[in-house]
Length: 341
Image (tube, rainbow, N blue to C red):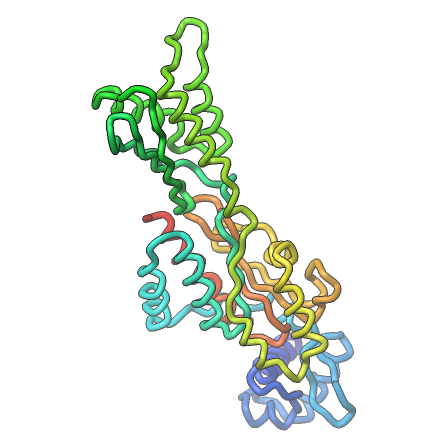
C-alpha cells in the first residue's frame, strides 16, 4: 500500500513538473491531486523517493523534480499507452491519407509527429534491403522502348526506360512480364535480385535468354541496388526546442548538434521494432553521453516486418504517455498506408 501511494506521488510529480516546468512541492500536490493523505505523509513519501533516487531537489527550499530513474519507473509502470481521442485519430488519418508518394508520406509523418508531441520528430526512410517486391510492370511505349515499373512493399516505386535492339510482340511482352513477376514478386531484394539474374543467364538444357530479357533484367537489378533512400532520415519540429531555453546548454545545444549528424540520429532511433512496441530511452540510457539530458521515444513501421523507425527526441522533461501514444498511432497509420499503396 505504501509503495502504491509513493508511486502515485511520483506520478503526480512527473505530471506536474512536465506541465508547469517548476519543481513540485507537497502543498501543490495536496491542492492539485486527491491523494487522500496528509501533507506530512506526502512530504515523507517525497523524502523517501528522493533517498531512493527517483526525485531530486534542485535547491534547499525548492520542491522536487523527477530524475531519469524516476521517469523510468513512471514509464515502466504505465499500465497502458494513453489512447488517442477520436478527433486525434481522424486528424492523423486525414493528414496522412492525402500523401501522394513515399517522400510525401515521410515528410507528412515527421510534420504530424512534431505537431502532436511538440518535440523534434525523426522519421527514417524505409530501408531498401528489408523491402519485398510487390509487383513488376512492363509497358511498351514503342515497339523498341519499354517502361519498367518496380513496386516495393515499402511504398517505393522505381521506373526505368529500356531501349531494345528488336521489338517485342504483345505475346512476348506478356510472357516476359509473367516470368519477371514469378521470379521476383514476394521476395526480399537480395533474393529477388538473384532470381532475376538467373533469368538472364544461360544454363545447360534451357534456351539462351534473349537480349531483350537481359536488358530488362539488368535495368531491374540496377533499380533494386539503388540505395538512395537507405540511411536517409527526415527531421521536423526543431523550433519546438525553443520551449526549453531554460536548459539550453545541457539539453538543447547538444541535441541541435546531434540533429546535424544523420548517423547519430539513426543510432538514437535504434533498430526498428515491429508489433506496435514503443521503445523509450531516457537520459543516460541512450548511446551518447553528451545527450544524457535527452529522451527518445521510437517504434518501427512497415506493412510486414518493420522496415524503418520513427520517433521523437527531446529533453527528458516530456509528456511520455501522450508522446508514446502519438508515436504508436502515427506508425500504425503509416504502416497501413504503405500496405495499401
